[in-house]
Image 1 (cartoon, helix red, strand yellow):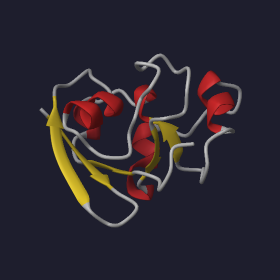
Image 2: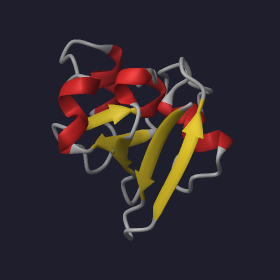
Image 3: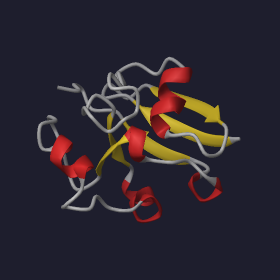
Length: 108
């Protein structure tokens, strides 16, 4: 199991565990983490699973490729930063065990 901690914009923490190979989006939705909608079903077709990767984890997750579909979608999200990623594109494996992801105040 991979441990993921989601931190809401109000500071509440939501530690969850999920099987390796699933996504951060699935970790949030399967564990009722508020603020992650994932409306497109994880198809990288919306930006309703926007998360901010904790700076301590950004190198392990990888920075957003500027020419990617994910980058195109994130330009419509509010509050994006250099640590912005779509949770549906963050595949969880052993190297990400313990990752911390911040949930923005809004997804739209």
